[in-house]
Image (cartoon, rainbow, N blue to C red; front, side, top):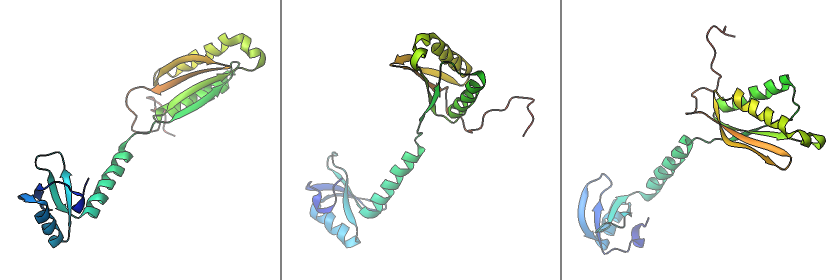
Length: 182
């Protein structure tokens, strides 16, 4: 975006700060009008025939433009990937605890990476690890879907689960009917 003396066009369609069109003027006349008003001449649409320029306060214009950009960044949803690490010979209580954590992550709108690490002789029983991953995915199938299928990379099986549908409005898990309030 060019301002004041950086503008190269000879003739410009000039617009005042309040939106009133002044018509097609020479660059010199437009710059004189802008300097008399104590404002800047800003080229809004350089590709138009003739190019369009507006007489405005450039500092104020840039401030509002940056504010709009900042607000649009705030509106964007940032999805994080949380990781849940498991072992192939995990106990049921530990499994349920990890499952509860993963459920909370998904309800908050995050993706969950499930990793099963094999150590030593556990490598002989990869099928047990695959079963744990399947069980984990089925338990979370009501709120999540498998984004990437389970893959074996070295001594680790990994898969990623992502939330179903839209991001929930509240981060609290939905209560079942008949459940007393705590």
